[in-house]
Length: 322
Picture 1: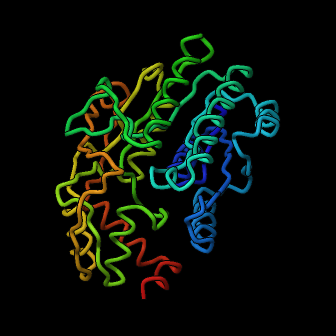
Picture 2: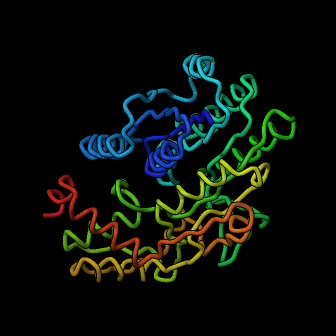
Picture 3: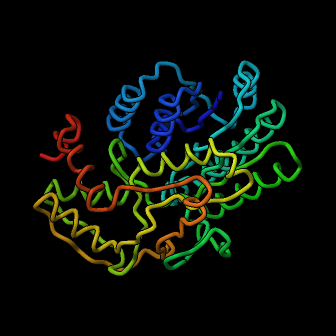
């Protein structure tokens, strides 16, 4: 298959590209490699270099997906069988900083891709959404649960789902919607919860836990990428929505304690819940198991340890944690 991966140099994206290449598919990548105004340039440069080295990829397109002219040129030169749409503002905090730019990427950029996919005969459009579309939820939430997102990030993600479904309803292509949760692992940026916990502990600092009983369905990046690739390649997933997570919630306090235990230093400060974020539990993944044999293998203890080992051996982060 000839597959376009937008956001293909991100944490999840470069792992998806790697797996597709290993399976023999032709892969094209677009990524603006932006720092969203919050990621230090030296950190972003290091991560981009390492991600490109990992996937052995020397030709990607630094295209803004909102640019109709540039994206039309890309689609015209290639007959894409599928589009995996990962490009997005990555989380609620980043959208809150710049909601206008977030909306441009997550709405205008998406519509541009949908129009081009319609015009150029793309057979399958895979949209990477988020567990944030559910809003507050407890364990075992299924894909047919009522969505009540809180905050612009979740609202824009859910709006994106409906846009994708509307194009598919008109018969332009099949779709698959993926809802991951709390993805972490090697080559991630520092400004995420697991990265913050681990690096703060390595610096013998104070890990700040926003809500002692708040939980997340932490998912190792390898499992998330495997699920996305399997869902893309399976015909069983056409016009369906899937949770792609470890399906095992852990409290933020437990996660912080685990980081401190693995690293061997650091202290913990428990604060009030951040009301900008919904309370979340574990997602039910029975549909993904049934339809394309999704089988997440990395539990939190193993995943945190693997991430710590990578950070320890990283020449960039070893200098940043002295």
